Image (cartoon, rainbow, N blue to C red; front, side, top):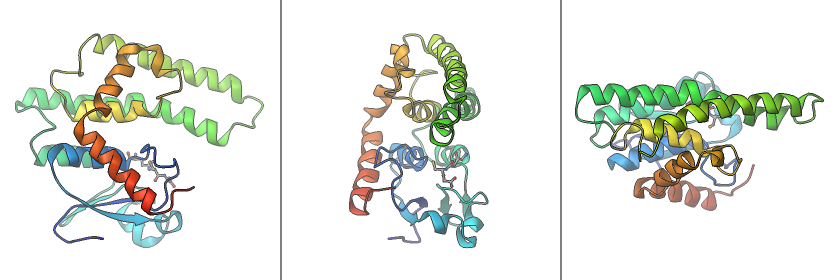
Length: 221
Ligand SMILES: N[C@@H](CCC(=O)N[C@@H](CS)C(=O)NCC(=O)O)C(=O)O
């Protein structure tokens, strides 16, 4: 499946979300599609992810990783930054615009994603705890606060800072985890932002590719 000349990303061998494209390889696939860069896949099982060979690529034993020539990267922020820096299409041409796009990438990953992931983790791991409901309300209030601020900043614009950029890609991919939760839908402009992002041909190609891969490779947990 791999060829030396193309960047290679590691992905789950089996989809934990039934092919909904919520794993973080999706943002890397999407970035590569936006810039027109073909790529290869290296599927890894959960056991292989924690084994030394994969930990040499990813110290925390996770996916995705990105290998291109002598470079191996293991954080999606760094991976998308790398892709956007080496190809046209994901950063504005001017340095100030590029800095603002990077700013939004960091905001997505360090100010928005953590509270969203905290809610998910609690739903997976803490559902049986007596304090689950109470804590869930607190976590959801923190998400609401972030989304309220983000919604006000976006206003009626299509994208966060002018044209579509890697900052929008990262923000939309982070928000996708909330689609259908009711939290995103409290802000119609954010729901529309995600829908607009998901309607991009590059997103569709990336989504269909992961779906086809899992369809072919035994969708399951
Ligand atoms: N901060 C990392 C997070 C990577 C991550 O959490 N990957 C998940 C899949 S989306 C994973 O490998 N989970 C399995 C595990 O942690 O064992 C990134 O953005 O690349």
